[in-house]
Length: 215
Length: 215
Image (cartoon, rainbow over all chains, first blue to last red; front, top):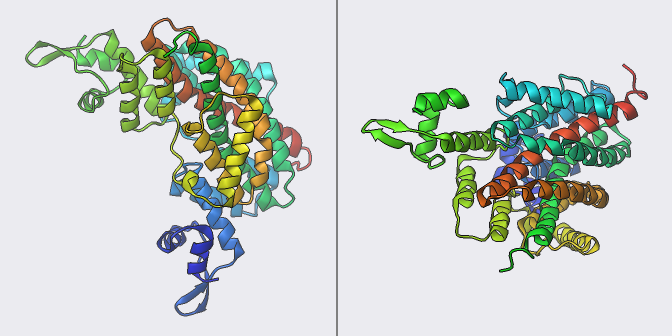
């Protein structure tokens, strides 16, 4: 199909499609004549994926490039690929984890105890571990260290979600689909869970506070 | 204390503190002489909160300004304040929700059924509802509509997390602390849950895939 048809099918404007091609997020169309490129269903699917990562995941163009590189790298075994894709999905948390104050030391101890208590197979170099330590240290620094008491309830819920995530991922048959499921599921899953948490909070809040404070 | 002492206690450089004051994120210090401002513990606490929202929450300076305005507005009743703070914490999801294709229509139906099935008190105008609809529609558009089958498991986990969130919030005695707990808990709670979900996924993935694909 021509670029105009690709634009019509996906709702993405033609100049935006050309921008994605220049940035390497979308392979160039095949030249059917010197100034006429042809696009196929592979382009359409990739374009929709880029839009989902942008609009729902809120990833930067650079981060999306990293994710697509991981999907397209056929050299790595599936087991490693999943780890690579998962690592690129962990948001960066500034330099909070790099600090070495009392709060950072205490946060590392708390996370180590949690991992041991739950029997999780997670290496200490895992970026999610660093992100969790940074979150806990920041809480302590703003006087909300007691929020960390909820850690075990959070971990319990996270385990349930991760279990259904993996069941969904393991259904995929080809390696590209497997990695794509991890990437999409991770990014959109975060957005989905955050939205559901807000909705459940509104519900819980209306039950707890509305009766005490009628308007 | 002087600005140098405030900087030493919080680890925030003096020029950055002055920038926050100019941007309205931090009240100016009290002038003790024409070119000497004095800061107190209130400044220190607010400064740590700003850093947490920036570093852990990843909020923009403008978004942090909105959140602080909500905290400082003493006019609203607590019940409304919590709603206001919660709404500002919902990330924007582009215009995905505004589309009116088959995927958007289907996503709205799915979310409406979920809210009814769980008996949640959530208005249809709630931004989290729109965010969830946008996430589901995007999934369908990239060929991962079946991820929505996990919705009920996600909602179950989100309800557990929201319950402990509210228990934590309801412990606060003053209105400023209440709203601050909602804001910090919401932003940092998302980061905490996302990190825990990654860790639990790595654990589940190593159990499922590592044995099939030894390296």
